[in-house]
Length: 152
Image (cartoon, rainbow, N blue to C red; front, side, top):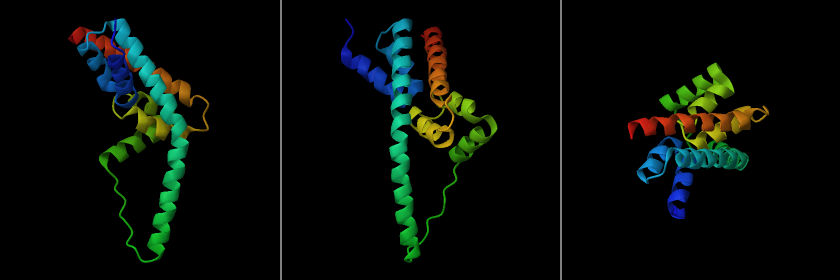
């Protein structure tokens, strides 16, 4: 019988850092089908959870921005915006490829939490957002599970 803590750790890894979860699953001795199932469920739950919680996170960020603006008006020095390579990459994907591009890079290049928050921020109005994000997770689950089967 499978250890429930091992399965939970695979599910949790799939929710947060999806690209590592098939490797973890195979290292724990699970088969291709089990790996595919665990990573698909974990990634899907991660997308749904972080997409739903992102509204709360964005409200918190708005309040923090308001507090910074008030502090800056009272003489506190304004922080310079950090525009990193990662930020540029995400903006390029959003502008050039839209929702599909963001969904494609979320499980493998950026984390599911960050991808879900970005999807909620930029594509909340689009009813295809959640199905597209989940489809990308399922596709990457098949690809990565198959890849680790070959490497194993």
